[in-house]
Length: 129
Image (cartoon, rainbow, N blue to C red; front, side, top):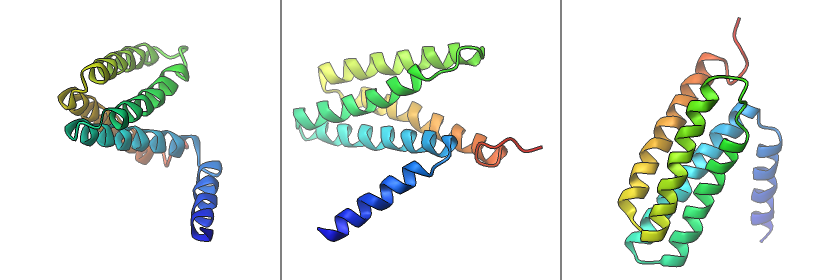
């Protein structure tokens, strides 16, 4: 029990001290994790677990969508991608279809990997001169 509290404190501190770029990466990782859990749950016909993890994935994508800065043209493109992913998650949740979730997962991994590349090019989100 004490070990769990220590781990929870470590995780909380990790989040509180993370840069905005690191937080974005953590959110992508979380969405990927929940999507993987949902796929496994669908395959095992665990409807409740699938539903809960699809909703968690959707909540992260919704957060990305809500925090887009629309003063940049690229935000429109991201908004369209996030809308599409959320529509696919809704469909996957209704059908409990792991193939649709695999498609969403592929997009999430691509976006996460692209974000990692951006972080490397900008020294972890801090613009390099």
